[in-house]
Length: 56
Image (cartoon, rainbow, N blue to C red; front, side, top):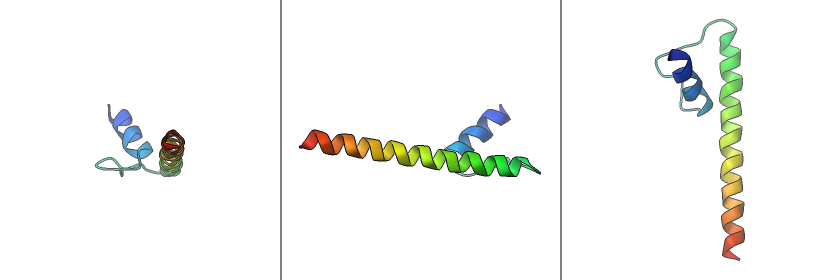
């Protein structure tokens, strides 16, 4: 359950909360956080483009 919580918090870039990675897992957490940020940004951009096209 802790792993799922940590993964969800990291990918959604909300923050690490009460669980902190150690050693080499810190790098993986950084990459997961960056991936989550990129996915959220791309989704928002797609929704914006779709809604803009529907208005025209």
